[in-house]
Amino acid sequence: MATQFSKDGKHFARLSTNGKLKLWETSTSSFLQEFTPDFHLTSPCTCLHFVQRDSSENHVPRKKKRKDSTSTSLPAIALGTSTGKLLVYSISKGDLDYTIDSETSLPIKCMSWCDGAILYSAIDQNIVKWNLEKRWVKSKWKVGNEIITSILALPYNKVMVGAKMLKLCDASTQEVLRTFTGHTHDVVFLNYLSPSSGGDTYVISGSSGDRLLTVWNVSEGSEEKTGVANFLMDDVPAYVSTLCSEGSSNVVAVTQGGVAHFYKHTLNGKCSKPLKPRTKIQVASHLIQKQTVSLIPIVGARLNDDLSLLLGYGNEVLLTFENIDISDNEKLQTLVREDRNLTKVGHNAIAKTQTPLVDNVHYLTPHASGTFKRKSDGRQEVPMEIRLENLTLNKLDSKSKTPRVNNVAQLLVQGLHSKNKTILASVLNGNHDESVIKNTIKRLPVPVLLPLVQELTALIQGTTVPSQYGSVWLKHLLEVHAGIFLSNPDLPNMLGPVLGSIESRLSLLTPLNRLKGRLDLLVSQVANVTAAEEDKEEDALLVYNDKGLSDSESEIMDVAPQSESENEWNEDSEVGESNAEESDNDIEML
Image 1 (spheres, rainbow, N blue to C red):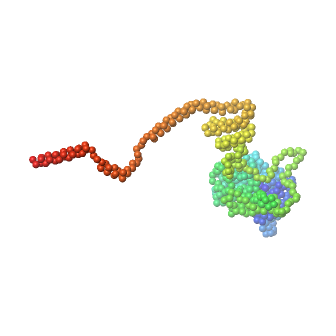
Image 2 (cartoon, rainbow, N blue to C red; image 1 turned 120 degrees about the vertical axis):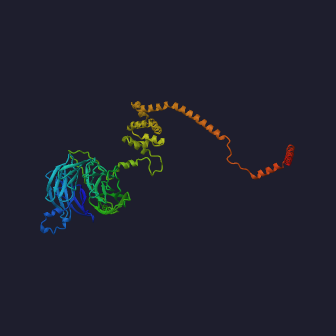
Image 3 (cartoon, rainbow, N blue to C red; image 1 turned 90 degrees about the horizontal axis):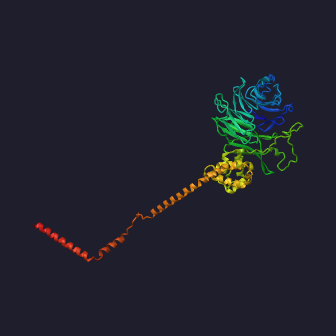
């Protein structure tokens, strides 16, 4: 590790590209010391680690103990070199304290110190155990066949080492206890996590080429060999700091682009999906003369005990340290600060001289090859998932529903190369205009035409709706690229399945037309019968009688003259009734 905060957070140390040690005081952002080893050209420093100075009291004479009592509280810095030597730098003296030789010429890749006078380091495939109190190499043993790139000293005399795979070792028996799957690139960061006392313990790791921080369970009772959680970042990590409080794990990761990511998670079982950061923190400066905003890279971040964040931002010459409060409510926090590099020149002044960059110079010799990787221009690379999100068809902020042709063509090419069913379904099964489909096909490269025909064949052989979409795409594809298809000798084999599917569908067209005609006749007859039934008279649901009209009609009927036959019928009935009464009276008298 080339940068590190001290355990109390009061100092920040950093190794420059030419192997010089630079030390800052975080409370005042002041540059304290710079140390250049005498042999930094032949064996420059490769890594550093803060250690406590308590063990050095045994080597101080008693007469000077009172005089140096204040200096023993300051930590020391252990420096590893490319020739296998361990340098211990004293902050109180401002100079080198002592040197320990490992009797090897191989470089020290990484170091780790937990407590006491024991320091662990990795040299090639070996773990080297240093005794800082006695100033000698205590033990050395080999771990696997991979070159170790990171090491972490754990409690209970255990050591975690990482190359591409991670291995948990017992320092007392020098045995490998467990092997983890690791990363696809070399591991460069290892941090210890202990959320609760007496509970499970974890180790978080980060590699030089992955944008994921992986958490591993290193408890004694666990046999897990895969990661239990992953933290997703926008870039590869450059610095990682951890802190456990109230059962939750807090992680801050600084990327190579200079942006800090803050995570907070309670480790309890496996997480199937990568965890995204609660918030991102970046520092920007406003350029008045150019009316632009430039980012100031963050070089280190440390979590304090009160969950505040100690940030260090700037460049190798000027660094500024600041304590800020983390807000989970905002996805992105931008701190606008004044760039100390521009204050020396002034806002209105223009620098007339330019200092050439001498770091990471590639020297060409007669025996060296002139090919090397092109350096990045300092801009942060956009992650792949954000690029894919930018290529989606339906933009939330777009006013028109018609997708752009460039987006559809790029998505179609991406889906054909990766054979992603989701992307292909979103493009081919979409309800696009025929003009968009035609323009998309015009922009397709020739190598993707054969995979596109295969995908369209699968659509045409499917159900009705996908078959309809596939037919439209195939029609325009044959129209636009007819010359290419005609020049292909494998054209019959290419379009054979499509023609077979079309012929099978056409063979069923005549029975379907007959069935359709019969159904139309039945539907028309049912419709006629239903209409005839509706035309029939139906009983009235309501009858209204006018009372005035009925009384007048009854009076007219009473007043109307009666016929002679009716009068005679009435007289005869009256005479008959009188005779009947007389006969009754006669019977009673007898």
